[in-house]
Image (tube, rainbow, N blue to C red; front, side, top):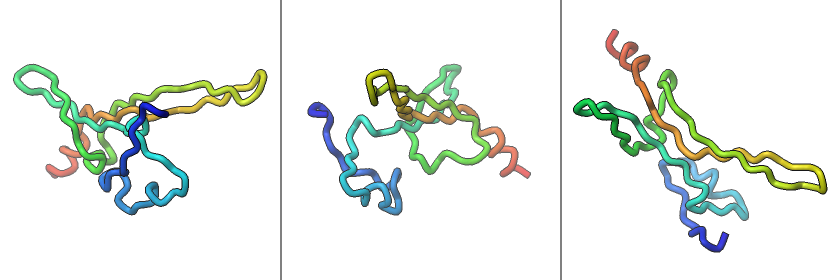
Length: 100
């Protein structure tokens, strides 16, 4: 944890301050989730950083996560999932709904 810088939680991620108010909780660069949208520009896919609020019901998304096995006893482990990123791949449902 020494190489992780403790940072304040962005209001984009925690608009009501609920996560920031958790006693003893630390938010480091290791806890940050990245948010992207894939766009086709000039026959090439690009990935733009977006705010989490841009993700809506009906979007086709790709979610990347990692799993760590943490020992909890001599022969027991706990599987810890960690969300890495969310990428909007397609807004077709949103576009159809708003064009009606």
